[in-house]
Structure formats: structure tokens, C-alpha cells
Amino acid sequence: MAGGVCGVLARAGCLAFLLAACTPAHKGEPPHAAKLWEGELRILPGDTSFTPCGTLRKLQVTGPGLDSLARRYAWLHTMPGQWIKTWCNGWLAAPRGAGADSVLVAESYAHMDADVRCAPVPVDSLAGRYVAEMPFPGGVHTEELDFLPGGRALIISILPAVYAEVDGLWGLDSDGRPAFEEAERRYSFRYVRVPGGLVRRLPSGNQVEYKYTGPAERFTGAYARTARWLAAVAAANHHPVNAAEILPAMRLDSLFPDPASRAALRASAGDTLLMDERKLASSWAAATTVQDAVQLMRTRLRDARSR
Picture 1 (spheres, one colour):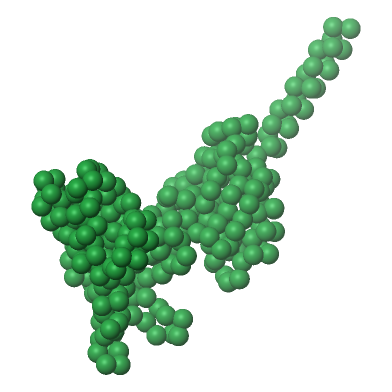
Picture 2 (cartoon, rainbow, N blue to C red):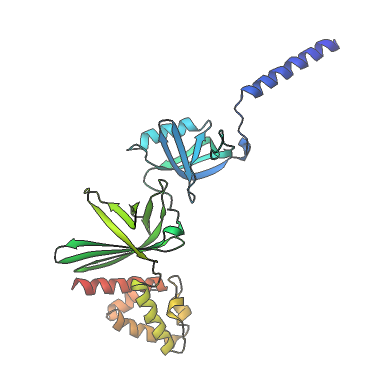
């Protein structure tokens, strides 16, 4: 009897060993440690890659959730090699080959959206000012890109009768291309790195060449003009501040803490921003931060250019 029991246990042990040998082993976090991953997915023949948002890593994808991801990707993608924003549950496993990156074991599909992207990842070695000058009827169209270390960006466009500034973020996308994303994520531009600058290809097939001209300028455009104006009014009302230390997120009432200084700023806004009483009571009254004042300054500069 004992021998029979031992034989059954031995056979069971052999079966367990065989099952373990046939089951794909992923060294790393076990399945019960799966978490939600957010990134961009690209599926090419023989290559399924996932780039987590905020990184430039390209992870190979495997696991039971891959079929669901592939079906949804096939439904949404419109061009070969397209990256699509993806959420999935899974965990990291050890690479399968020498020198390979980690593998993302996808446990299950969560969501996919082709209309949004991960924010570009800044690489400070590419920060700087890039300038393009293009012939335009009646003059020249100048476009300045300021890609600041850390990821903040500003585009200034100047035409004979147009002045426009756009805030945003910059960095590299999942293809490793420099990208600009407008602050409210309404649109983005992609660039190609070339010796001495960048190139942006237009939908028309033409391209715009930007030359690297030196370090990016944080204190520029309407922001610099607004900061100098605010600093001058604050100093005249016994609240001295260095213009270069005024940041867009600061509240105006932190620079003008008493009713008298705020009244002086309001009066100055009428002259500096060319606001009548109606606009002071509406647009200016709604301004609470330095960035709000910057936006009003941009409107002032744009209107002056269009006259």
C-alpha cells in the first residue's frame, strides 16, 4: 500500500515537473503583481513594441493579452508603424536574449485611443533656439522655436501683419523624433534632426528648415515684456521684485498684495494693454496669474501687428 501511494506521488511529481517545464517562464514580477501600463503600442511584422509614457524605452510585448491588443490595433491603425496610445495590465519580465530590454507581459487589454499621444520626453542635449525664415508675400515669415531644458517650449511666429506665440511642451516621441505639443494638447508638430538644426515636413510636401542659433531663451516674448511691466509697477508701489524671478504661475496678488498696488496695476493695464473700462471690468478682472497677464499682452501685441 505504501509503495502504491509512493508510486502515485512520484508520478504526480513527474507530471508537475513536466507541466512546469512546458509553461513559459518569465523571470520578474509574478502575474498577481500586474499593474496598469500607459504608453504607445506599435505592431510591425515580427515586432510588437510598447513605449511607456515618460520614457524612451521600447519593450517587446508578449503574454495572454497580446491577442486583444493586436485586434484593437488592427482596427485603429491607419498607417504602417503607427504608434497608438494604449493602456494594458501586465508586468515586466526578464529579457529572452542577451542584450535585450525587458519584456512586457500583457495580461489583459484595457483601452486604446489613436487620437491622443504620450507627452514628448525632453532630452536636454537637444534644447536650444531654432529659427526658420521663409519668404512670404510682402516680407518674411520668421518662426522661432525655444526648446527649454526640462521640456517647456515656446513658438513665436512673426509675419508682416501677424504676431503669434504658442506655449507647449517639447521632447522626443516614440520614434525618437523631436516633437512640439501645444499646451492644451490640441495639436502637435514633428521634426527631423539634421546637422545644425531641424526640419518640419508640411502636409503640402514642402519642408521648413530651422537653424540652431544657440541656447533657448526663457525670458523672451510677451512673457518677458509682461514680467518687466509688472516689476516696474510693483517697484513703483513699494513692492520691488526682480523681473526675471516672476514666473507664469505666480498669482498677481502675491506681487501686488494691497489694494493700493492692485489699483495702480489696474490703471497701468489700461495704458499698457490698451484696455478701455469695459475690457478692464471683464478681461482684466478675470486675470489672476502672471500667465493670464501674459495672454492679454499677447493679444495686445497681436492686435498691434495686425493694424
